[in-house]
Length: 130
Image (cartoon, rainbow, N blue to C red; front, side, top):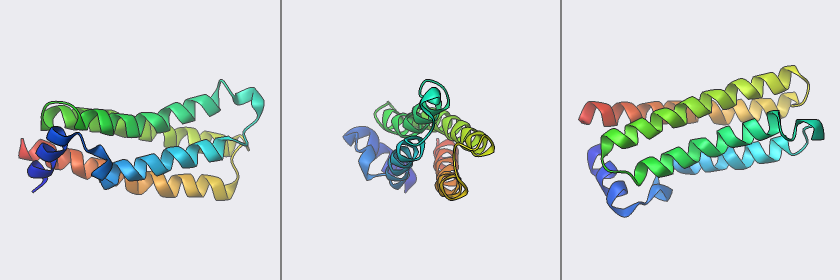
C-alpha cells in the first residue's frame, strides 16, 4: 500500500496530500509564531536557526516526493528527521535560556514528537518495501 502511495506522490508531486507534510507545515507556522517574541538580538541567531530547521522539515518532505523513487524519498525523509531533531534541541535551548515559556515549549515539543514518529515510520516502510 505504501509503495503505491509513494509511487502516486512521485508521479503527481502531491506532497500536500501527505499528513506528515501537513503536520510539518503546521509546525513551521507554530515555530514562526513562537519565535516572533524572541529577543531582537536573536533574529540572526536562535530565531533564524529554528525557523530554518522547521522549514527544512516540510521542504525535504516535499522535495523527496518530487524525486525519482522511494529510495530518494526515504533519503529526504532522513534529512527531514535530522532537521526535526535540530528543532527539538533548539526548542529546549530556547526554553533553558528563558526565551520560550513553558506553554510554548510544550506546544512545540508536543508537535515535534509525533511528527518524528510519523517520519520515521514512513521512512522505514519505504526502506523495507524497496
